Image 1 (cartoon, one colour):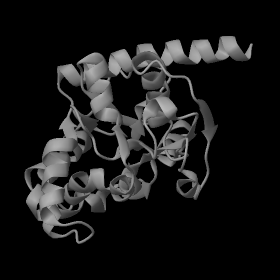
Image 2: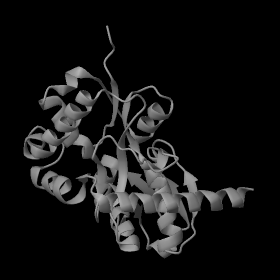
Image 3: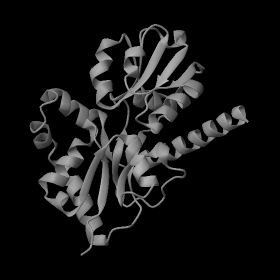
Image 4: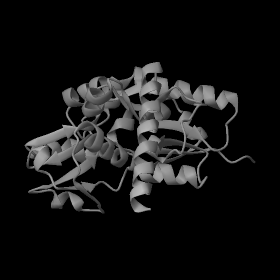
Length: 256
């Protein structure tokens, strides 16, 4: 008997439409669905522990020319759930704590600080509970649902999706669907159909979620998070890979 495909997906609010589509369409029963934070989606993909994964683009070593799905996690302006939080204006920040849950956002904030804001604070990799250390001249990169909850507490909130748009004029792609073992064409067709089903029934997904009020969720899913990776999104992703390679080369040079 053939084993069912293992599929890893980020367990943040932004994937709710995808999860709703997979579950409500019944297609979820044809896979083993694994819900984890972005860094584990990346690790499981890299270590080939899953067949399909919603992979953060920062974990990819090259641009994924052959995307089997036209869907992903992206934004075209404010994303709301990837933010640099601070008690002081950005030019007064001397240290930035880096969220441990996503390499993509860590690369993005470093690119924006250096290239867009022209600032060079000290960076510190942070572990669980680091949010409590964001005060004074220490800012923090916070992602996912925690960013949504924490942003109202801080006088200075720098939305990285909007900052990327201001810097480049392009959308930003956070994650794309990738495979280690290409499923058969029928599975791919039904997989993408289930994702689209979720996007077509966002109101139903919202109705089944009690974590946030409906007006906020409608704005978040319809204004902040974008799911269909049209050509401009791929253009933005290519530019991110260029900036990522430049940043990594400069870091290697500095360390060397």
